[in-house]
Length: 366
Image (cartoon, rainbow, N blue to C red; front, side):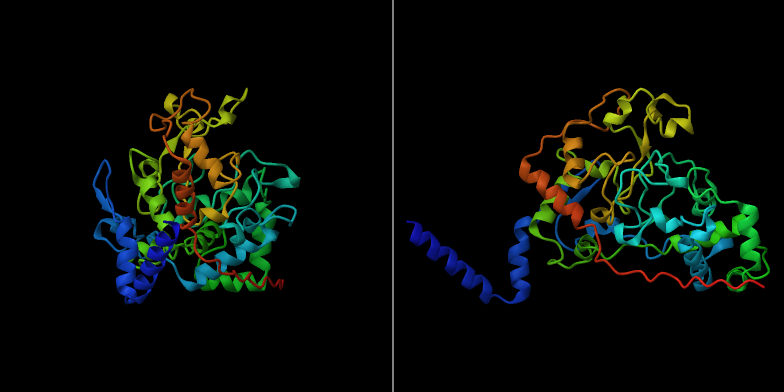
């Protein structure tokens, strides 16, 4: 009986291999074409299906009229982003906490700031930040042009002495030339520095992941396991992840208390509540976008989840500390296979790594 079964499997494999490639794709992937009815619509799990178009990122993120993207602004912003001389002690740069090798985040639970002190939150990834309408874990800034300068001046991060910093930028020949090319006729000020940093950050776009290629029509871009994981991700009866990690950038720009153990601390981080004194926002933090997520461990605002499976297990439990927990968070019924499928899908949201060339930071005073 076992020998006959083996012969049948081998025979099928030979017949399958004899099919033209387009037929193989159809035969292989048709087994994973399912219609998922979400709260809003139906999604067909087939590469390139029109129902998947809502997950396609806009071609270009928007930029304010007074800070439209130009190569000169992006180049200047990149120099500033990588330059530790912006910090008070000359040893921290924006890239210190937002490293391209780690999805423009960093591989530690809490960022290290001024004089080596650990900060209170995990550094968020900057990948696709240009598509977000609220910024930072507590949402206290709404635009990149306003937010980008924040860490430079923050006392617990780079703690810049702006009088000295502006003096340096105004007298350094290389920076003077770069500012004049990027913002002709405008004085070098904190808002202009912030605009330049924001311009560079608007270019940190992730849109060539296996998932992006799959929704674009490449049936071979995602494995069958990743496709099953996407089904778990969007199915309201399974993971229900898309209720917060919504299309197209996997973020709802909202704030949720997800029941982390740290909310049970004696003096927990109250998150969004510090900005808006609404009871439901106690311990609520911004939903993070998750393209390139495989590079950005650890996870959550407190960096308490060491890997993606730990994230999944947290949601399966429906959170730990139930006080003030989001109404959207409920225990999940997932098999071990479904958990692993979900992790595989999230890994398919990361793009191939492309090395980033650091700028040449020359210094030439008058």
